[in-house]
Length: 212
Image (cartoon, rainbow, N blue to C red; front, side, top):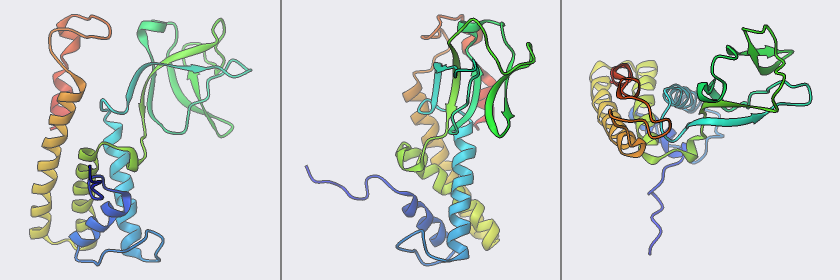
């Protein structure tokens, strides 16, 4: 079977799409000294982070174990966007938040007022990960590129007609993302496959509204 070179886009492809949307010429590398390229790349990365923070099936894990260090403290990986203790593993034993301890991001227990967790060797979390652009599902790359193109266009050109057209592209890719997510996540209003919850706790209308 022939390999399709354009089947999966790269960060360079996305940046070039953004550049072309504002009337700039594409580049062969992201290492060029160009303010337009820098704005396009920074906008893309900002959008990538914002969209992934919403939490999708591809970057969300439940009951993810993290071992405590030798001081019984939990250091947070640097590619974590959101993190919370899994209530089915820990109940309400702790009330945790992210907090810096001498420049190191750790889990802090507000209930116990401490970074130290005793009587356990690991903690289980519900985590939303930051995934590198190259490793994202293609439909999300398309959506992030379309959204970044609209934002970059407003910042660099500020043409109302162009912005309107880019908004249409963004809306179309957003719809495709939601369709992909619905299929991939196997969501339903009747049961929770992970924890066998009742329908009221499984169906969350606010999440649908938040993503529209």
